[in-house]
Image (cartoon, rainbow, N blue to C red; front, side):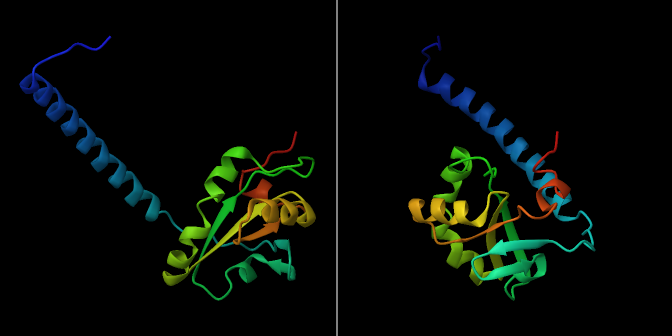
Length: 149
């Protein structure tokens, strides 16, 4: 159980914790900077995705924008619904799409489930973002978000 202290003692403890939190924030900022400085990887493999507009390549998914943000949405071909955690995150995507587009970013969710399952689940959930199937390709396996036995 936590102790009960005076305001001054609490303030001293809070300021000490704040100093640790700020130090951690600076460490995270430095780590994020290193991530942004990672080299880019040239992709020579052709990935084809099943989309409502027909088959599209990874390059097509950019839809004319310079950046592509992909959410690997866990939805296995043998599942009836998408992942509950991924769904919780997806509930917040519609609100940020305009902001992403104004920053030259295209958002697309990718799952291994067939497009018919994806489309039905997406409609049921009321989502408007692009969501494609990678079920016919090695895309999820090559990016280590799906694994074979």
